[in-house]
Image (cartoon, rainbow, N blue to C red; front, side, top):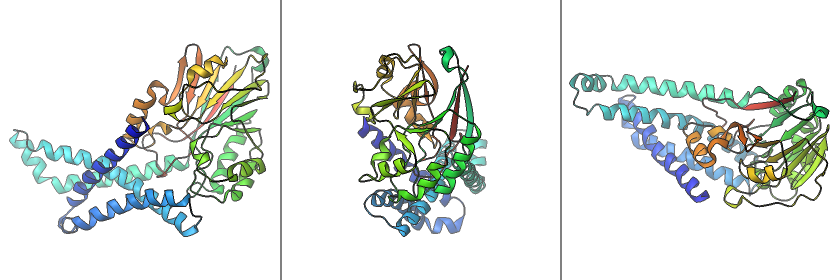
Length: 365
């Protein structure tokens, strides 16, 4: 299934290059004369973006990190040119329909349409960048929990992807937002780090700025950083890591399930420190799968992330195909609530089209 997901991603990107190329070529004669260069630039941006991220996991370099950030931003803009390029291509295709008036209108307004769609792509890019760096607070009220924990509140963060793009100053701003909500504890449901920066010590002061007990359940990107860097940074940052382990916070037991890829899910992980008397339990699994396992642990709520709500349209279609109704939002699984966060940060392009990132505040009433 992972191979199919990767193949679908590569197919969308490769075809997207063609649509973006057709759109930009139609801007005017000068752009048409540079059509080969434009295609080379588009492909180059994608290759540099993917290549620099993979290379950063092997080599620590300030200039390489800067190159990755620049390529990620440009790829974000390119993604919107791809999307609007598809609309342009479909419009031009419709000119071949047996409708003389429509065909004449499309042909005569070709350059104007290209300029309008390119401007819209730039606008979506700017809006998407804002959505990525400024997540919104969302409150969810939980009912029917034991009387002993009523009035408690906690915050879910997910997919912060700290690294080359999301720096300590951004994390400090997120911590300020969260502290203002005065939660009893904070859960980070995976991918605290991105894997694009191995110098994690610079994030320690920002991690320490969270005022409530903060729990990390690792995600796949947290394992991309080699060695013990993540464990050392989180321990120094007063972050509690739960990986196939449980702990109680303000009368609520949090069970952290170690990261297992979607293709290897449906396991039964051994949690040896569960409290048999706990009647208010939350299970956290980075990937929105294994709901049956969380249910078997008598969890009232399961928290996940990973899918990013698709992050950049049309990848939301892919995540919905992979995870179904659990790809995003609040769902019911045989009486157990599940919530899959859209994520607080982003991976790759710092871009969120259509929907912003999230800071989720849960209140038990």
